[in-house]
Amino acid sequence: MRRNYDFLTSIDTLILDQAEAFYYQNIEHLEEVLKAVNKFPKKLTDLNDISRIKEVYADKLAPHLRQTIVVQKFRNLDLDYITREYCQTSLFGNIQVVRQHTNMLREMSRDLQIKFTLKRLNVETIENQDDVRFNFFTKKLWQSVYSEG
Image (tube, rainbow, N blue to C red):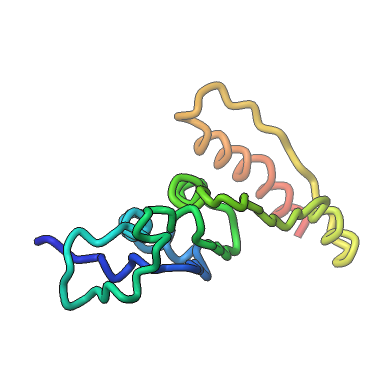
């Protein structure tokens, strides 16, 4: 079944708010929409009004003039790739604002007066990393916490 996405031709501002939701759903759908945004209509139909299409869209410059804003709670490699592939062609440049969480564990432990101990586990192969973690937790950590309680 062929779908008509010509109504996405004249998008000036594209806002992807709560973009992490695309990760939880089907991120391929977002990719398909971003492929269709700002494409010039192949034929005139009832869905597209030729009077709305600006000259820059007719000259196929729209993707380079569109402003895209992506708001997300956490970084996701798939979403980063898709936005880099389909949204970073602006003639005016790109900007990315990322909140840095430095020393968050240290700040939490100071505020809540919680002691954190980080342990490094040596894992020989990636296939058995889950077993090594589980064994370390059950034999070392859980027994020491259980015996003290």
